[in-house]
Image 1: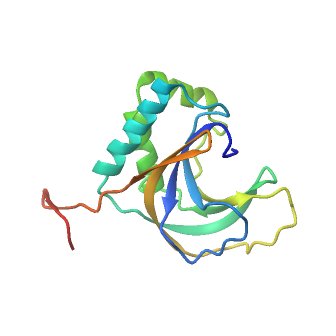
Image 2: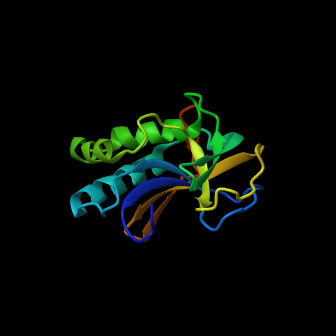
Length: 172
């Protein structure tokens, strides 16, 4: 997706030890809504869902990597664990369930891959011979959910609130 058009929802990462082999922001795509900007109503619904998840999600935000792939000869991806408790999978599920039926329909009509494969997009390259190690081992932490819409990026940082025996705490 170009930053000049279209809409997607991504997880952004805290600084990590994965080298930047390509220009581009490391991110984990949660949902792709197509190459055209969303309507104002759908965009507001996406932002509401992102805000809600970012404020209420209290699970782990750490995930481990386990390999590298180049998708369709352009997107370079560092693969993440695909288990059901991977935070990218959990957060994506929470986000999609928080959308209105109308906006979820827009997502379903535009998703390009029917099976979600959690990965960090390193960037895009039309070079098939770019060198990237076959196995990058790292643990990453997710910083925020962002809405990328027609070149604009709207950030919803995760709350630092930790629940301990049902009581919210602001420290360890």
